Figure 1 (cartoon, rainbow, N blue to C red):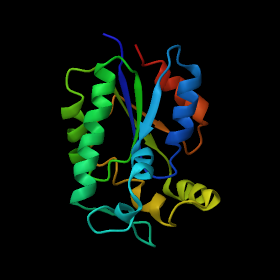
Figure 2: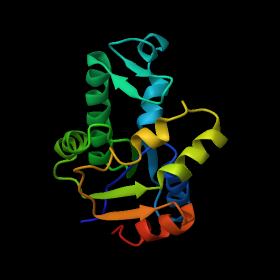
Figure 3: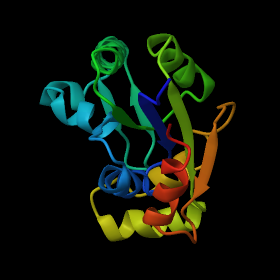
Amino acid sequence: MTTQVIVVNGGSSAGKSGIIRCLQAILPDPWLALGTDTMVEALPASLRVSDGGIEFAADGQVSVGPEFRALEAAWIEGIAAMARAGARVVVDEVFLGGPYSQRRWQKALDALRVLWVGVRCDAAVAADRELARGDRAVGMAVAQSEVVHRGVTYDLEVDTTHTEAMECARAIAARVE
């Protein structure tokens, strides 16, 4: 059975998006890139500033409410449906709930061939990238760098602290069947 979904999990500014762009360039088949940022951008503005939606605190902490969780569950099921329909999908995720987050994806992706990838990055390096980006709340990278990996099981882990995105993508592509 060929790999149908690659779930890439890591904290903010760890380098996931760059790796995914490289994967799309080097994998022989077309892969859709979908992730948490895509979902957040699709939310109505009212859910990006409410207790029921998703909130980004000034210190980088992220909190989500029940309306966000309901839409997120539908989003996850939708991505699983696309994979079942034949699309190959790379998921760009931030498992704020650690193993709880992974279990939701595992349930939705049941019976699909999934490659689970952890993207690590030294918190200080991720924080420097965060500052350079300028589009994230300062502190998010440090707050997420370890918590998103606690209790999560991977098939492969890469570390972008000193490794370029293309090299990480090649390591991941080597595991795609």
